[in-house]
Image (cartoon, rainbow, N blue to C red):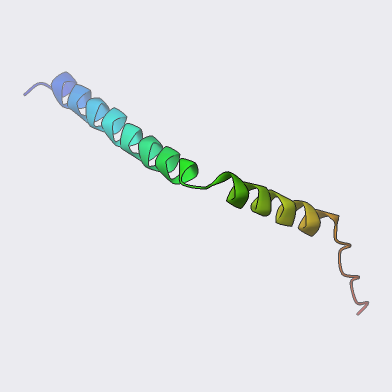
Length: 58
């Protein structure tokens, strides 16, 4: 087999693997209900708005 055939097959396998990873991530993202997403966003906002703890001097 020529080197360019091997490189082409490796590229094809990489594209297929990337598609599988993207499809799995999309399926996982769409598994959340609207209420779950809203709850997570509210908790993130509350966490970001909370004051940071003061550093202790050494």
